[in-house]
Every structure is written in structure tokens, then in C-alpha cells.
Image (tube, rainbow, N blue to C red; front, side, top):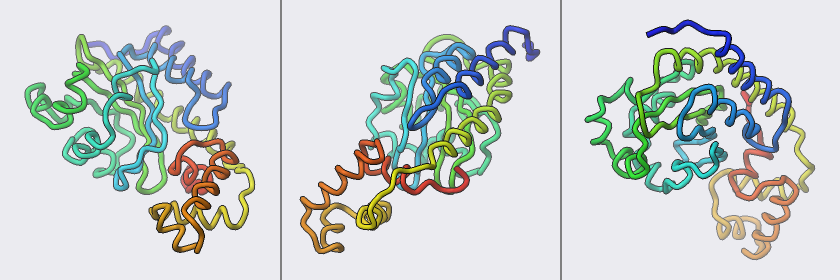
Length: 247
């Protein structure tokens, strides 16, 4: 199987890179990046995920096309199987974020079909093949682009080479986007105090007791914080207000 790079391949790589560096977005990556990546390596769905596996938290989940099967997978079910799925947790347990991996690096088709991740998450949506490209993230976090394919052959050596060439550029792009997004709107001292309690994992009721206020006051503070930070979730607010290093 040929692993040489053609002029068309180079043009496709440049399209993905240009789409990222010529646009901005409040969170994640510009949608055009996923669209061009989907064109470069044909698949059913390509997703970008920013997660904190030990906390079972997903901060960002983007897909192209946007109605992909991965968005329909129940979070609790996904996290229940995450650490038992060798390809899912590989970057977390190995520390290797440079290698582009596929499901077939870890399982034969029969072995994969016998995993809980396939039985409960991927199989019901017909997902047979995955390729994953990881980029830099703060300690404990995992950022990755995942290519899902339900029909046809597994991802080829040629496609893996394209993703390997693309990876450092996507890493650089995300660092650039995060630097631009580090300018966070000012929060009041009280809002910062409350958000740090959120970041520590406390519930609204626990925060209310800690700050000696009502649960309704905590909810109101959170509504104001969400509006100021342009986010819709607690995890999104924490990620926006307290960006970590590396980005």
C-alpha cells in the first residue's frame, strides 16, 4: 500500500490548516477545520473532544456532520467503559499523544465486538473503525480528534500518515486559539470565589453552605457567570475562567 504524499494530499492538508488559522471561535476549533479534515480523511463523522477522564467530564464535544452518532452516545455509558477500552484510554495511560492510533492497533474485529464500548456505544450506531489524533492538553485533560467510520475498510497507512502530518499543525492551532481566548471578562471577587468552589467539585447546596447563602443565590450567581463568560455549563465556565498551562 502506497504511503507517498500527492499534490492533492498536500492541498488537502493546507486546506485544513488554513481553515483553522483564518478563523476563530469561542470554544473548541472552527467548524471549518472539522469539515476540511472530514474531506481529507473520508469518514462518517469527525469529532473534537476536550475531556477530563478521571472526573468523567467532557468540556467540549464538536462533530462534523453535527448530527453524528457520537453525539447520541450516553455520557454515563461512555465513561463506564472508557478505562476498559484500550484505544480510548491509550493517551491517558501511556502519555503518548504523538502516535495516530486506530482501534485495530488494539483489537481484532472479533475482540472489538466483544468490548463494552462497542456493545453499548459504537455498535448500536454501526461504528466499526476509529482513528484518533491527540494534541497537547493540561495535566489530567485529553484533547483529541476522532474519525469514525461505519462502512468500508479500516483507516489505511496512507490516511494515518496524513493525520500524522496534520497533528503538529492542529496542536499549534489549538495553542494559538487558546492564547487568544485567555482574555477572560472580569468576574467579581464573589464570582471567582464561587467558581473555584465549582472547580473543586462542590454541588450548589455545598457551595451555598460554604458561602452562607441560599441555593437560589448560588444559581443566580452561576447564571450571571455563564452570561459573562459566554458558556452554558459549569465545566465550561471553569475551563474558560481558569485556563491551565499548557493550554
